[in-house]
Figure (cartoon, helix red, strand yellow):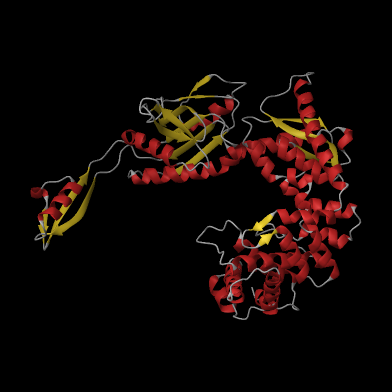
Length: 552
């Protein structure tokens, strides 16, 4: 038998949909196993208003099972026997006495699958881990009886082609086989016929419930629209996922960017369009940003009617007008003049302000270019543009530094010293960028560990492990052999001390040990554990860390 559960609700936030696909499958699998049900396949679908979870190959009923449970000793106090009888639901004459103990043989009778589905559905509703949920209030009992990401409008429960009907606890709903199609183009009720036709029935109602299929449809529609003007789409996997989570059935359109804003840097244009409007950035064949944007909607435009596109272009003009104001205002201020504002931003309550951090980096830097980059590296945090678009930090530092006549290596360092931005992202290769990245991450790691601020279990809100991994990758991938890790730690400690910030006397030891542990993880991610253990060394100077990594 095939089980289909569909929860039809108001729009599920796009950023939560991928996780919901995996979480719902995991929960349904666990609930079915707890009920003693076997299955051959678990799957899920999701669209803005539809979350469907299914299981294939269920039996019609569970098997009858007998469980043997050992009880108390025969000469145990009566209270112990009474407790055992209560837990088993049996009487004393039903127990078996064997050796020194009582034994209960508990028979679980076979149960039809349909009788278990209310518990399965309610378990799914209770256990689904949404980041945020809305709660239903029951006026009769004055309590909150049910929570879900958005208001639920209908719930389908089906076994093969049969609808299973029962009231849903906490909701004024009864399950059935009714759902709804595209909210604008096919809003009529649909009577589902079962899992085998589910995706096709929804597709006929202008809803593509398969996330990956819908994602491909979004990309194909946008590619076709861009190709009509000989343009390409700037790759953006995050935006593609988000747009996929917004539309039921994609329709792609091209709009024009007002010529008054083409002077803005490419990063400003693309970020403003992506963050505020969910528009795709389009490029010419030579890679330059084209004066067009791509947008996906849930409905097609009417032939000859520009009302919708005029509205989309008008909203973008307003957004880009704000961006142009921020950009032009920022350009009039020297980055060096913004450094003093960093004293008002707390880096960490135990480690001073961001301004304090900048002064520490300057103190540790020995090369003149690295020292200049350290002086300017946080200035863009207080610009209008980064205040509006935090994801442009570093990028705007590089852009403004270039406009203000800073050297190319200093300007580039203001962007690249944040790298690596992830475990698979590149590390900086330019010498000034690499040097600044290393002293910045070392300052952070030394400060946190020296103040006894450490990750606990899987929690690492300050990304301390990622900082240590960044240091390891900077050392290994740059093939540096002229710096000593212990010396680098001591220089960072000395910079804190000059500011009156006393760190633990075990800071050097703690930092070395922490990096050692992360280096072990780094190696084991890249080769078999046995080989990693074999090639690991105890000496943690930069030269040896690089040489060890070459043995992978």
